[in-house]
Length: 182
Image 1 (cartoon, rainbow, N blue to C red):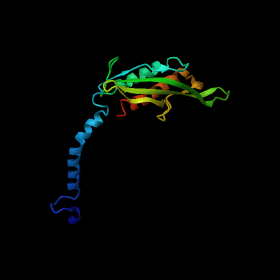
Image 2 (cartoon, rainbow, N blue to C red):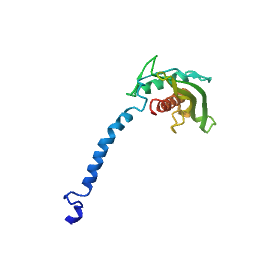
Image 3 (spheres, helix red, strand yellow):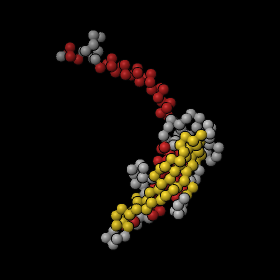
Image 4 (cartoon, rainbow, N blue to C red):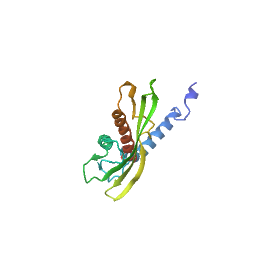
């Protein structure tokens, strides 16, 4: 039995030299990876400004809700600081379309479950190098697969709740693709 456990001639189990080799390899490789995992943004981007999106729809306040949610999410990222002007990078965009779709009707043929989705385009501009990192990128609030714009009209839910939920989903996707994507 003792011979099966000791696979090396040094008296250590065979797994020990392999584990030591992996530990040394990880110690050599991970310090270089740590700096890229900390923030994948170009190193010169330390501040970001967020402009209120232009609203090309008839839905009021959507652009303000999207901007507020983007600001909140950028503020949560420790790699960048939010500024009101002269940022190293800027996020801009346009709300192109708001869709309202009834997914379920009540027995009286009134909307029961309703989904609000928002379509937009956004850009991420590097003010330092004066170039677009992303330009006119289309995005939808439903791109994540989550349905933040879903509300139950038959249970007292409001269209505003759906719009705010969709704005939150859209903002999350925009921040993921800008500050979070690098």
